[in-house]
Amino acid sequence: MTDDELKRLWQERSAASPGSRAGCLDEESFAALLSGELDSKTRENAGSHIAACQDCADEFRALRSLGGLFEQKRPQRSGLSPLSLALAASLFLAAGLSVALLRSRGELERSFAEIERRLAESAESERARVQEGQARDAEVATLSERLDSALAPRLDAPIVDLDPFDATRGVARDSVSTVEVGGGADLVTLILNFPPSRSRDGFRVEVLDEGGGLRFEGMALPGQERASVNLTLSRAVAPDGIYRIRLRDGDRQIAEYRVRLRYAGEPR
Amino acid sequence: MLPGVEGISFEDVEQEARVELWRALQNEREIAHPASYIYKVAVTSALRAIRRAKARRETYLEEEAFDRLPNTPRPPDPEGLARRQETLRKLDGALSRLPANRRLAVSLHLRGMTSAEIGEILGWSEPKARNLVHRGLKDLRRELLVEGIDQRP
Image (cartoon, rainbow over all chains, first blue to last red; front, side, top):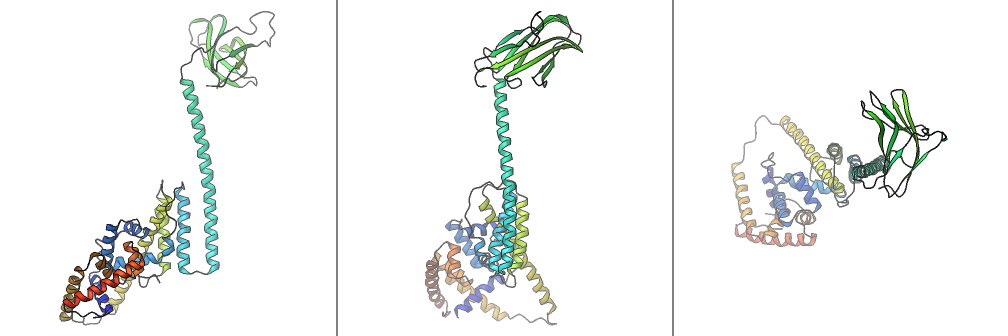
């Protein structure tokens, strides 16, 4: 009996029971086998099976013939989106298979050019997506910092009594009270004094910046006769600058205050 | 033609592999190791494509064979069948007495694998695989002779 006869005999055996693929190598096993990731024991098992199974032997040979396709770069870490991966994989497949197919040079070049163009587009949108994500992360970090700062207890936050700017005769109408906020504090409490008054609906407080922009408005408790309202301003709402504060009871203005806020030191 | 899969071209596999690959990647959200992932998807896609192409070809061949069936089927050759079964039994016996490495190398050789392919499957160098096949075949001849089969190269 010759070597060829022996081979034929051996190979006919598995061909005698076609159809059943129980125990055959699955996709993961083939991927691991081709990438050299299997340990020696598992390799031996895979080898024994291939030796006994014509289908798996054929598939191993077919996958192996796609050669360059599966011998590309080993794993590298990067953060690509599925779209980029799909394009990269397409390039990967196109490269391996196209070379194997020995396509005409022109066709191959066009194919590569198209894939590279799409890959570049995808990379550009990927970069934009990453930048957008970074900007969002920075914004969240800033907001989180501000929130932490706002919730932190304060010591020695200044409290300043303010009289209406035109309460005293002879004071110029553009007179401004200056409030120095020292020690890195970023909160200041202003006590807005005014002639005793009662409001049915509550006193409305408005804080306007130099340009007339409304920085804050709120309502103080209604019902009681009052001679002052406490207003606490944060550096985030009212940074260094001149502000006009109006106290109203409905449409009627009760008092107006002008204040220049000056913060010393960096915000906490 | 794709080696190992008669009647199937690279083009058959390429188109199917591309579709498989896109489908697989579309369903993914987070991929920790892209290169490794692409590699696995590429192998998986190609294998599925090969299996589908094979199934199509087998169906076609079965239909063709059915169309060409003679009116009276050829009677089986029980004697020839029994002889072949007996030879196979002896071959199995002879192989089982070989050292494990040589047995594996020879089994794969009988399956039609080259030394390079055997080396890739078992993680050996090509010269090592060739050497083990050579020595294994020598052992096998000796064992087959004991079983009454004269096997020549």
